[in-house]
Amino acid sequence: MKDRLTQRAKQLLMDLINTQSFSGEEDGTAILIENFVKENEIKYQRQHHNIWAINKYFDKNKPSILLNSHHDTVKPNKGYIRNPFKAELSEGKIFGLGSNDAGGCLVSLLACFTYFYDKKDLKYNLIMLASAEEENSGVHGIRYMVPLMPEIDFAIVGEPTHMNLAVAEKGLLVLDCYAKGESSHAAHSRGINSIYRAMDAIKWFETYKFDKVSETLNDTKMTVTQVDAGNQHNVVPAVCHFVVDVRVNDLYSNIEVLNIVKKNVDVEVKERSTRLNSSSIPLDHEIVLAGKNMGRDIYGSPTLSDQANLTCPSLKLGPGDSLRSHTADEFIYEKEIDEGIALYIELLKNIL
Image (cartoon, rainbow, N blue to C red; front, side):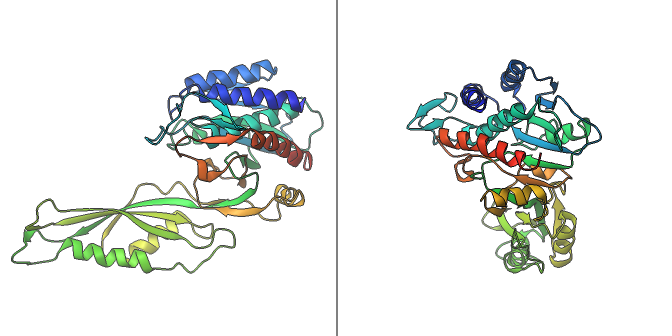
């Protein structure tokens, strides 16, 4: 059964690559996923472009594990030489947009869920969610779905991790900062120069160190990524706007970090959202211990995923390499999918 599922999963991945699925435009790939679950006689539901199912012998008195990955993609960058919407198999690699992020993870989890779908007497229920709008944190993705599904006790989120366990993930806080000054002629230099005021604040962002350092995610990191001020060489601008990207470890909430920032800088600070908090799972959780017993490494991930939209314990785990995500001529190795399906199944067997 595993061999059949593995071959079908790789064919599904090829089909997904051949079907454009930018965030919010995933109807075509949703239909492909529907066809896959129908073939395997799995009862499913669809909300918007999200496809989800529960195992055949779901028992509301048992705890539930969510298996989740996404089927939307970013738009291809200009560096592509190959056709991003044409799956190509070459030298053991499957090329195409979304192959690594996160098509390989998605088809591997679908195969794993199918393997366990009609098994009786499982310790946990299984919930499979092929979600939309992950890449743009859209309103009709996983956060739309969580209230509609049964209660989740913990989650495995499929993202490329070399099948090692990302047991924590940094949160994201984006800040728009406005340094206010007084507009004047540059020759006179009267009043407050908003750029100089911004420079003082930017220096603070560069040098400030948060007290709490995480065992898995290290420190909370702030990076100024954009600066905008002035439109004439001889006019001192009244406002200097700059943007700060903040990656928050699991020892702080986004609100806590925001409050620290506002107390320390003499500029107006506006947060775009405080929703994308850090995620983690206890290191003594049985799924983590099972993974370690299988020889898998554990680590903290600096990149954001749909984990940020979950309130339950969660880990990130999947075939592929995060460094290939969003790159030109994206690919995943065939053998990574073979190994991914086998490892997902073995990992769950150890706790089910």
